[in-house]
Image (spheres, rainbow, N blue to C red):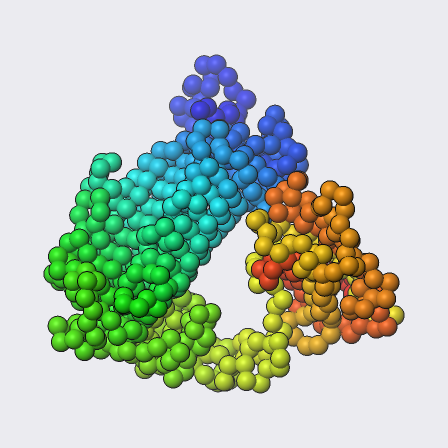
Amino acid sequence: MGRRRRDGWCGMAVVSVLAFSTPTVAADYWVGPGGSDADTGLSAGTSWATLQHAADQVGPGDTVQVLDGSYAGFYLDTSGTAAQPITFRAAGAGAQIVSDNPTTPDGINLEGVSHVVIDGFVVDGRTRAGVRAVSGSFITIRNCRLGYNGKWGVLTGFVDDVLIEDNVAHHSQIEHGIYVSNSSDRPTVRGNLVYSNNANGLHFNGDASLGGDGLIEDALVENNVIFDNGVAGGSGINMDGSVGGVIRNNLLYDNHASGISLYRIDAGAGATDNLVVNNTILSAADGRWCINIDNGSTNNTVRNNLLWNDHSFRGAISIDASSLGGFASDHNGGIDRYSVDGGNSVLTLASWQGLGYGAGSFVATPAALFVAPGTDFHLRASAPAVDAGAASGAPDTDLDGTPRPVGLAVDVGAYERVETTCGDGALDAGEECDPPGASCGEGQVCSQCRCENASACGSGIGLERARLKLRDAPGKLVVKGRAVVPPPWVAVDPPSSGIRVVVDATHGDGGLDVVLPGGPRWTTSANGRRWRYVDPTGAAGGVTRAVVVDASNKEPGLLRFSVRARATSYELPDSVGLRTAVVLGAADECAHLDWNPPGGERPSCKEAPGKLTCR
């Protein structure tokens, strides 16, 4: 595929000039709704219309900024360089790939390329993979939201030095959330949220049948949160043929097959010389072993992990006879079940220690270990995991980024227990309120030694094009905006579920928290896409009118809303730290906006006596 020439020279003059010219200057291009592929693409106002056109034009050093909107995917077969990568970046949170690229049944396809960055796209419901990259190197895939894709969220094959970070990969229909396949060296998979995929959460597979040495070498797998995967089998983290890998600071819970598996099915050899350190793994009642090692997977080390299993028989670590060579295990905590025959029989920790493993390991229940088992896996102050780990191989920080160690020694598990006092009143590394939240009121949380109001929305979905007017007396409220709530929706149905609107500040009193309940005050339009709430009495926080519009025919998941209220009075919240949140369905079907203070850049507020106006 050819590139557009960027100079005005032609004929033989071009040949002579290019022979002595410096490399082409990198450019920033733009793609946006309503753009034209016949335009220059050099600004938002002259943007191109399609991602494929951009992919056909880019070269080393170019960046393609993609405005919020819905797009067909793209197929890229042009490489960047180490000094000048090619970057495709979503300019906002709503750049969505809504159909496959023209060549393969995937959203974004990188074919035989190197030094390419994919950043910030929403890729849902593609036929095969959300993002696919094969036969290349130095590929970065970050900040993408990948859901309900036919087979994989991310697939790479024969890609060295791939970096897959800070993505959300969920509900892959047939297989895995993130799949690093075929012979691949130095892959890094970190900071991803991976959940509810049919098979593995993360799958690393050497697959010697397709060529190469069939090994995944020197993988780094860290700081991932992985849950509710494996209904069809697999593992939270599968390492088929991993050699010299480090798996650390991962939280795995409620997965329905194995936790972490080191093994060989079709790789060039077993998974050898790996370090599994400072992970927290809790397997579901229908799951397998927390850590599973077999098929000649030797010389592996399992240290500083918290391992619990709700299965009636299975437990912490299962290893088979072919994998015992060079195996080391110590300073792990949790359930009192181990196996050295591939899970056919179970040993107690005492028997496990009698075989020379786990001298520094211990037995403990989730209730003894965690702040809130099932929802908050940070360590309790009294947890036996505190200061019970070994320094060797332990990561320098924990899953939250807290430095290790805090206290006398490294803690066991993915989280380091922070100190219980604020010391000088400022939150230093490893400190929190003493005790956490004790002096905070109802609905508040402790942040940096100071109580703050809990946010009404933690989905990460931004409130867009928001408007807010709030007057104290006589009280008046106008709030408008839009949000893209990824389908399929769980409870977006105002006549049944109602909506909630919150205007407050991070600190202090004031504002309002209004729930408009479902019921007869809501009416639905003939096309079923517009819901209207009318209450002349203003019984719910003074709200007299509200409208919610399903605009997903224009953009998948798009919802618009407006709420108007009149009341005797409202107490104005602090204009510094002012926030607006709207819950349009279930708790996570919500959107949130932090307003900049008066004088700041938009979105910001103007403050007058008794009045706030924000846009």
